[in-house]
Length: 412
Image (cartoon, rainbow, N blue to C red; front, top):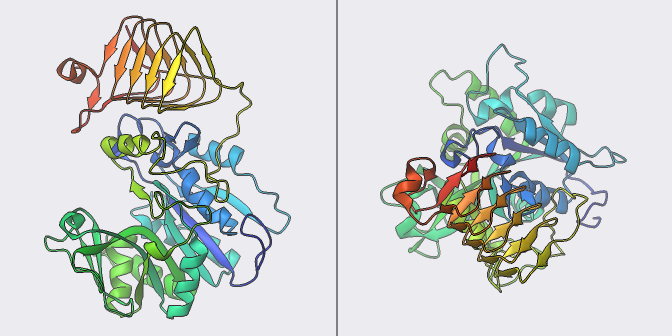
C-alpha cells in the first residue's frame, strides 16, 4: 500500500461523500451568507478543511462534497484550495443539489445521497465513506474502513466515548461486546454504557462507512418511504441496526501519526457559537488541547500569498495564534485567534477573542470574549464584550456570553 500522504492506493476502491449542505442556523451570524462548512476556523482554515484533510491524508482522493445552501464561498474554497493533479483519476468536487429527480432541494442527508447516486454508479466503489463537514478533529479514516471490512458489517458508525452523564445531548450507540450495534438512540434520557465501561457512552460522530451495495439498497428503499425524514442518522442507520447489520467503530482506537497524548482523540462539534468559541480556545495554550502543528498529519488550508505577521511599537501577543499579513501595533492580544490580514492599532486590547480575516481594531478599542467575522471594523475607543446587556441590543450574544458580530459590520 502506498504512502498515506498522496500515493496511489491498492484496493479496496473507496468513494468519499462529504455532507456539506446544512444551514448552520445555530452559528448565526457566522452563517448569515455562507454555508456552515465554509466558516473560517483556526486562523488559516475553514471547517471543511478538517474532514478533507483527514480523507486526503488517508489516501482517499475521490471525494464528492454535497452542497446546498449559500454554497458559493464553499464551492470557491474547494475549487481553489483542494485541486488535485488528476493523474490517477483523483478529484475533490463540490456537487450542488442537481434536482435530477425534480425541482426540489434535498429533504435530508439521505435524500442528498439518493439524488446523487449517479456519482456512485459512475465511480463503482466497493465501499463508501460518508462523513460530515463541520467537525474539528483528526482521524485516519482508513483504519475505520479496515475495521468495517473485518467486521463484515453493512454499516459502521464512528463512536466517541463521552461521560454517560453528558450523553443525553447526543445520538447514542448501544453495542454488544462484539461491536454490533443493538440500539441507536437520539438524545436518550438514560444513555447506555459501553460494553467495557458503564460510565461512558458511545456518541455518534456522524461519520459512517458502508458497503456500497447495502447503502444503495437502503437509500433507494428510504426514498420510497413516505414516513421517513430521509436522514442518515435518523432513518438509514436505525434501519441497519434493526437488521443487525451495523457495527460501532471506537474512535479511541484510531491512531493518527504525530498525535500527542494531549490531543489524541480530540473531536469537537462546533455547531453553536459557544462550541465554536471553545474550540478556538483549545488552540491557544502553550500545550494546546488540539495541535495545529502536527506535520505528520497536516490540516490543509488556503495558501495565501501574504507577508508574515508583524509586531511594531511594542505590540504584544500572548498565548495567541496570529495569521499571516496581520499587524499588531502598540496593542495587546491575549488568548486569542487572529486570522490573516488583521490589524490592531495603538493602545487597543483584544482578549479571549476570535478575529476572522480582514478585521480592523481601532486605537484604544477593547474587545473581550468576542467572535468578529470577516472585515468587521471596531472604531477607535469602542468597547465590545464588556457590557453584555448593551451588546445584546445590537449583536448576537450566546448563552455563554460570547458576542458575535457578522461580516462587514462597523462599530462606531
